[in-house]
Image (cartoon, rainbow, N blue to C red; front, top):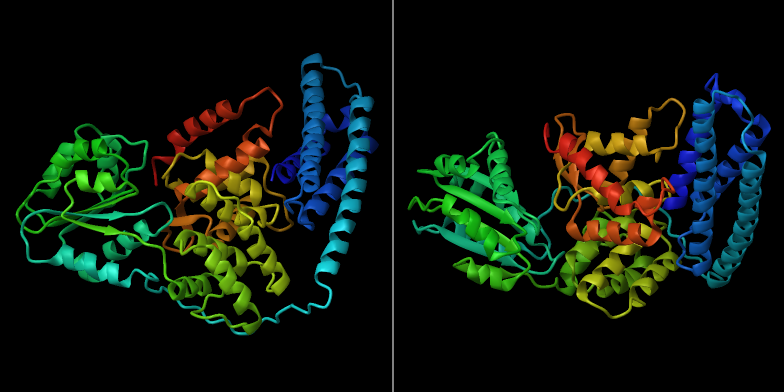
Length: 510
């Protein structure tokens, strides 16, 4: 949310400025204090109010809050710049700040009126509906469960991988985004029988933007070898020669990508295997696949189990009052695992009320018919719109990372802190707060864990490409990447700057 990020940023600037011995005297203290109070009041308003309620009024109000906060930040920073270069200590422009303070005051009044309308509407909608479900303790978790609806496919692929056929075989998994291709491949890849059967296992995510060098680097890194230097293809070929290996190329988009790397996978005549996942059927056939598994939507009972695992952390719904609306939500997800998992993760952190979940079902049902990808994005956008305000800028910011990027957790945490997204708390460092935000996004199934540290903390993470598309879509709509400085249209410039920084800091030392 642009408004939350902007308000936290301007409040951090005010706090730092007022504690600075030189800068504190160049501003009108009462005016700055008044500005801080207004910003804090607006922050409290959006934190405790569903400002992303979907109405045009809510969207307009959010824009007004963000604009006022940006204006305040610009006035303060411009004045600091002028004072540093002029060497004087005249008071900040009373007129500029006073206009912003009055504008914020007017926004607060509008917000109070709008909040009252929403409250009245909610009371009317909930009239006669005593729908709050009491928490049942304890909620048992399922632990690491088998992939729902993929059991037969797992067995089929394992048979193909371990069959007594010495010739190198290629197995393809085909399906649209979010159908569970990577999940299926990963479950097979990590199976203990498969680990024992192959001498070497290597994994690389290819994606649309690829290079053969990067693919070789990922494959070598996954087996614990250096993924840097020249002639990585030759190095990989030498490593694989004479050994029974399993290679997984995840999310391959073109035959050209396959043609650039396939000659470096030797046919040792010992039962080596290659698994490809792709969204394009012709890629699977043109790559010479001997076997192809096409991912299908989950069946009704499978969808329900997957939903319950994510929405209740159980195999079934523990609340009879929520079963009917839960089934309605599951049907509207159309058997797409990604949608079910993300919506389930969102509902796990949401109020357990019939009315709230009916609203979720209504929003899904009202999605206009468009392309499949757009439909999925619209479903996934529900999880974004119901994120707490403090998580929204952190989530959107992850869209600056390239597709399929494995993001070092320490790096994204430092970036969040540097951007001013983290609101300080007593007795807690900003990095600790940001780490909690990252864990929250993981719990909501919006961010995937790449690797854990030895102490159980997240070492690296990544976004599903559909989730990243959602980040970019919302960021473009809200001008989020442009939100921090009013220096013209710098959306692309900002993203490229961030990418350069990430290239130098994030690719190495994972």
